[in-house]
Image: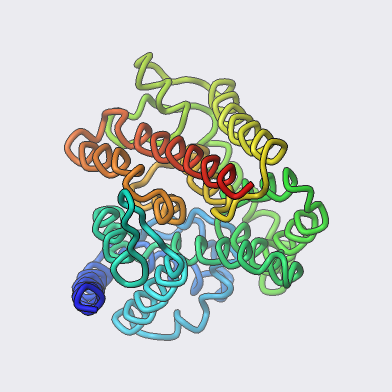
Length: 360
């Protein structure tokens, strides 16, 4: 009981502190990512180009997010930041509500488990909240779709489609459903995603094709053409790791090959798991989610929120992840963040396989 009360007090204190920091950052002249989202929303509804806004963080997503943020854009920056922070915390608690951490024979759950995970992911979550990022919202949509897939497959597909329409990387979850032979759910999720992505046509008409042409050319294709060996930024991706090893831009072929290799390895593991044992209670979906940073054309610290569901079930086995992330804070050009993601995925795969064998 005392541990639960202490955990709740600490979570509330952290929430208030991060909310205050987010408000202060949003009120600066350059704002933060949330201010960029809201500026893109205002531009879209005013008939302007959301992808080319001066003095703002660039808007780098499909336009569905800009459409649905209209009510938030009607508020002043401070009020919008507070509402957005509350939404982020609601999503975080939803994601971690079933968290159970095992440390040897001891297991902790509820507020205490959530507090431990927030402490481990402190640097990652602080970046998410202070920048007003959308990753927790996207992650909550994906987690919700997985939890309701058996009882409400249409709703689950809609949630996954919305996540893909906000940020394209959750499309990896389509592969998860295909491996599970849930072809109808995967197909319906694609249909929902297409519908949501094309929804801005109701506002801008045929100009949508020009806007999306800009988005593909200046962000998607530009980010997958090559890269720099990440001299001045962190990296999670396989091709970033190759660039770090070789010290030279890997080129588009390596970018694509590295992404295909990640997907192939995850699918091969999942397929082997399904053919040799019963479907485990700890869903392999969390492994797919944790792998999404390895595919992203950008590497930002807050992208590691995708690893939250897997970290919530690995317990002490996920300790190397925490250690490597903290090392990465002091050596941002090193391979530590990439190795952290890989180590968590390996620990999660081993834990899921062990639990699936125990359940047979």
